[in-house]
Length: 105
Image (cartoon, rainbow, N blue to C red; front, side):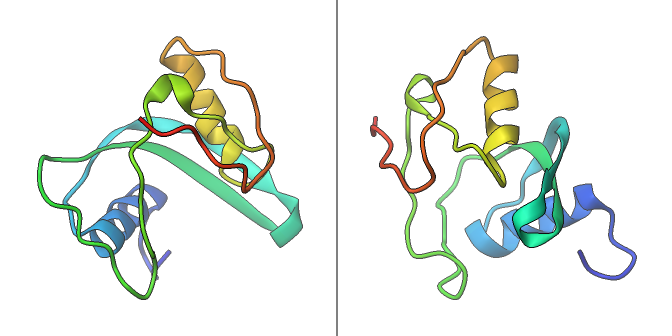
């Protein structure tokens, strides 16, 4: 977060910087301890407008679209937040080890 920035504003700024799109907040999912890095992860549902994704080359190498029913969250870091978001959408996802390839579309 930048000085004086709220976690929600930070999430929207990061989406803009990393994807080149102006997102809006769809809701707060929760916060999750990430002991391995002595951090707290704030998870938001963000809504993206239609438009071309332009990846920030210094932040991201690539992205993939994965159907919601095929997403397998990982057990730490951002994974628990993704799991909880999926549950609010009526899914009961299996957990996969971090780095496990996801089934695409």
